[in-house]
Image (cartoon, rainbow, N blue to C red; front, top):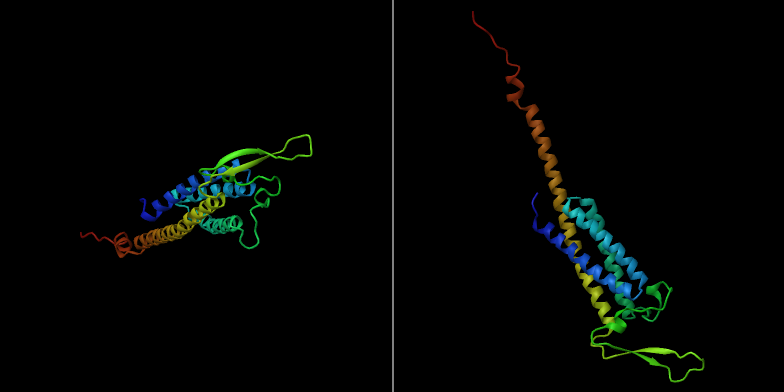
Length: 207
């Protein structure tokens, strides 16, 4: 079976999803965002499974991939709502770090155009001086960068889901047609009058 348009497109989409997920994983690691790190890890595994299923003609693996894309869309919608503080969510909570640490998105201090400075507190009652991070000059706020990342993931997942369903249907039709033709050839060989009478036809010799 050659590389049909749908199959080649799904292979390309899975490859693009892998690259996008790895890029996102790197920056989530830098920001110690443990919840997104775990979600990205699962996503990478399932996308690899879907890519393998597409290349090796394994519809069951593609079914797992298509189910995961729906869950991945839901997760990214939650991330968007989290950073835009929709529905009572707040970006200042430690939800993304499982309350293990107080780290925030890496883009908060390292976004495009951002200037990061350490500012010492003017008044301190303790002997140790406390310093704070001052970020200024950002071209785009970090929350919108996170929203853009999640929106891109949603777009890839939706397109991937559509092509996954198409490829599954093509693979299923090919398997059904192969089984039908194989059974028809076997039946026609055993039931054909040519094969059933020629072998058993008596031969009379004249004296």
